[in-house]
Length: 287
Image (cartoon, rainbow, N blue to C red; front, side, top):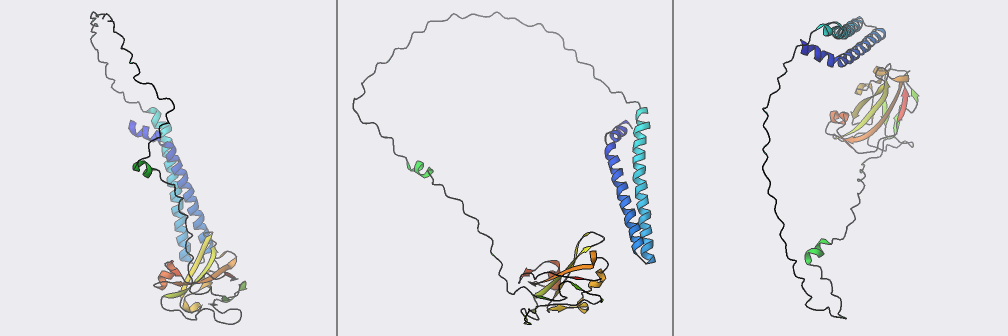
């Protein structure tokens, strides 16, 4: 019991922080549930929002109870618990042993004769040429390595594109679309000429990216579609009208890139090799 109270008192601040974080998480869950209940019109979704609100209240209550239990134990139970006595070992007594003193012997120094000084055998030759230093050996010559400048890093190669960047046609830049059907087309230049193929081979796709800012998540979102033709509409799977109420200011951006991928799923997931630069980005609105 004493060990548990000591552990609880040591980590009390972490339990308090955990409780505060849990209460804040429950408040966020409650706000999300109420916002979902206000924005939906279906009875089933309103019931689900009510269930989430009830779970949020349970979460807040549970973490509040955790804080109260930890505070109550530290305030009332901990001070009233008598600490357990610990056994203190008695010191070991070592018997005293008197030191043993031995007589020391003093040595008498002996006289050492000085060594004889050697006389020079020959005088240096006057006017002799200075001695040349020895030539370096092969090992020393190999050790003298001329420093070599480090190789310069070459820039990465520029990707070689097969096609030009597709020109965007429909919807035009800044268009406001009131209908439920949105059709996209590209590839025709300003002179009316088709600058890219109308249909691509099986392993090549037009990758259409429609992007917008999600209101609920306050984060960028996008819709990706890969097709072999240079136009898509709602029958091909594009239904931007479903995101009309989710985009901030009902504003969307779109662009097209020609890519090579083994399948349409790989193209949509990002497993592809670009065959053209990305087109310019157009915007449109769904009021």
